[in-house]
Image 1 (cartoon, rainbow, N blue to C red):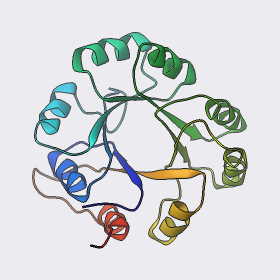
Image 2: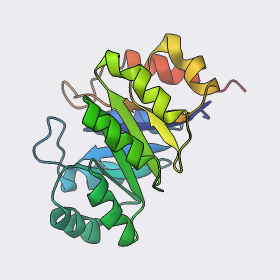
Image 3: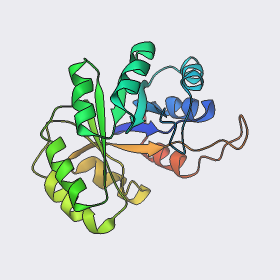
Length: 203
């Protein structure tokens, strides 16, 4: 299958989600390897899931983990992409030859400044998320000036907004999230399925 825009699905915790998303032809699947995260998955679990899935490239989502820990895990596992939440860590990993995705969560004016700084750098992608609606106009004003990196939208990604997201710059794609499985093989996909189906290219 093909989708009308670039899609990353992060926080994958189970094989059901991974296979479902791969079947739709998503571009990237991410695994949250930060032990402090609610969506944490061990390296062993991630490797097991990756062994059963073909198609998407895989992302190790490290968040704000220390550089030394990230470097060790990456050297041992060689993920195609590493995702972090701090510019200095992203830049150091880039110098080590990693394909880096920078995730910027905007919740304050200082985060806006960090976003403005990040779009002047070259990364594999920059993922922009926001849970503060009052800051969204300022985000989009800053992004309107252009970016050295493809921008992935991780806020206000809803069915009613898909055509606008696809057609209007500056975003090159979207990020969706996986969810926990009640028990192996039993899942309700709901919104994730609705969005992927809406993005599917008709033959």
